[in-house]
Length: 251
Image 1 (cartoon, rainbow, N blue to C red):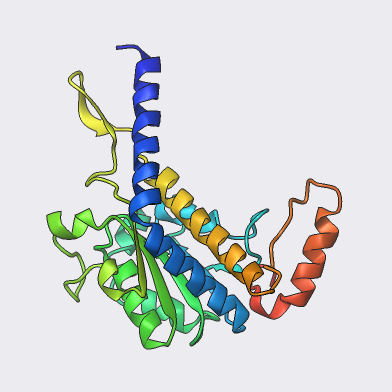
Image 2: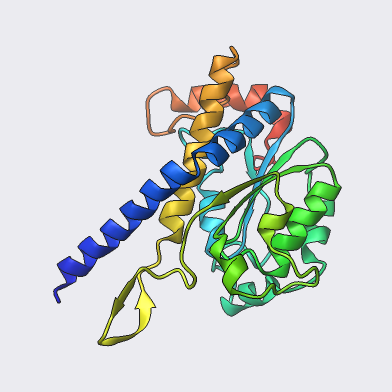
């Protein structure tokens, strides 16, 4: 089997998942986009969190050309991506009780804000505790996860629950257990993960919905422009000035 055939199989798998979430999660996307629009309109702030590779989709929403300027990254030291050394420490931190509450309690997040929490398995202490504590503080939680994990794995946190159990809106990425789309008889492990593609697409669909919903209400969405386009810096400067009290990545 040639490499090009495998490449085509991966694209087909990713496209199939994107079609599924487009069709099956349309209601959840609409609900999440409306919740974000409501929060922007009401003066609330937006935060996104993901651990390990789930942080890629969170970072994709922050300080992004074409994105809402109000989305802030809620960072957990050592768990944002794979930049910590050793990288396995990030996986270990996901299982530490108390870390999520400590991060939230020292963050700017407050009642009336929205927190997007991304966790493929939704079973570890960090995302589950993050969702539970956020709601206790009065935040609304949008969870992005693969619901399949809840029926085929055991929770790995003190509450015995999953991320999906502590959200105002759940977006199901439909990713299969193990996050690898391809197999070959000659390769002993499955390979080619698609969770980043699908999760990022789901969240950008939510943000597009939020922008359109705000516009429908006569509110200009606080969008950023590319700094590589003429006038982009000036545009962003105006947005930063107008919404500076709700943007934390510039401080």
